[in-house]
Length: 288
Image (cartoon, rainbow, N blue to C red; front, top):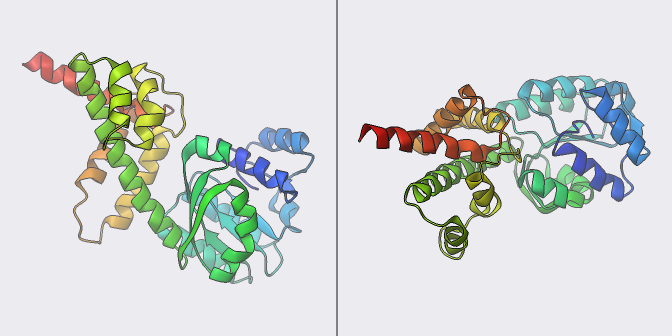
């Protein structure tokens, strides 16, 4: 396992519980050392420390991180090994990674996840996979240890394309929930009554359920950071650019999260979007 952040560390623990974990690695060596000591596995200090692994799971932040790790692994993994990438990156990056590894007869699956930190901790992630179907079947027992649903979406890049759609929906829901709750505050509605009422009807959704109460208390401990949402949305904008479809929701969300980061909310949970909605509501109220 490479990448031991808020998502990767829980995944590593679930793999370890199956008896399948050999080595862990992380850009910050102290994290790898600590988890390796906790689980009784090898702490990797270079790609060479993964040379005997049949499967390497990646969960890193950026396209460049994926390509850097893949280039290193291509030189040390044995033919027939498989790299499973849970990062959210562009379709083109997934294809470049697959080509780099394929030149060494090493498999690659782009397998981004949805479900947030809670999903990783509870082993209930939804995983969307692109790549060779036979390779997908080989890694399923490993990935199933931390997944509620695993779907093979098609060839290389199909996993990342599916994650792009997921992020459009997530961003749109975030916009609507934060705007609605900011309006509810302005109208003086009782949050203890409002939230369960909304959750019992057609407005019910994961974001409202998991983040509604905390955002109204101005608690923005990150489950998914604003800066990561903006990174994802810019990837989706790139994917959508040549499709010819209207992307008003996507573009508004990207602009809003960029503004949030400018206001200092980059490390905060995406539910901090309500702060921006409140600012606009106040500005409009003052103007009136």
